[in-house]
Image 1 (tube, rainbow, N blue to C red):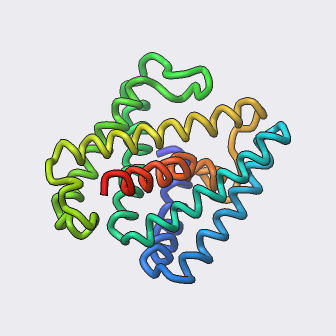
Image 2: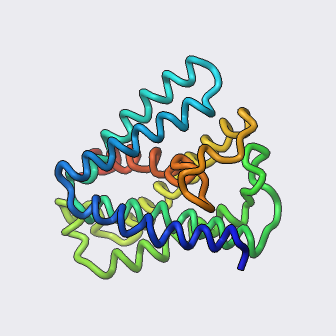
Length: 216
């Protein structure tokens, strides 16, 4: 096991329980948690954004993204949790399948991304999310069961959120590459900066919120 992977595992053991605590608690604790993440994200974005117009647009987007993230949590804990599961499983699928199968590169913007990793992201997201979906009554997650009354609707939703999450990853990678920066920060050993970890989520939560509003 590489030293970088050991750092990733160690950081995750510490980060995940703390994050889950604030997410589970909700209310002002969750607002404080999001505000802290927002400030760190803004600092990291200003470092990689480059042009002034990108800096301003990025700060506005981050504010909207974190507000809609809070809005998703306000709709319900399970809805919020399933978005997290989709994004995390997307990252895991991309990482493991990309390392295992390698193959053609997906984009010059992010040289570590491969088509096998992209496919693995979708597969992992669908399998892990669907497993979670079957553990609980989906009526708990969504106010109206008709939203996911057919299983293929849920699968399409997962694929869509996974696609948005992967696009967010590539978007942040573009600015990192443009700024010649490997990581957005060093706050998490083995992981890099905060934006390195939540690049997909800051796009996935707004997409999930509007999908939820439109369909429910």
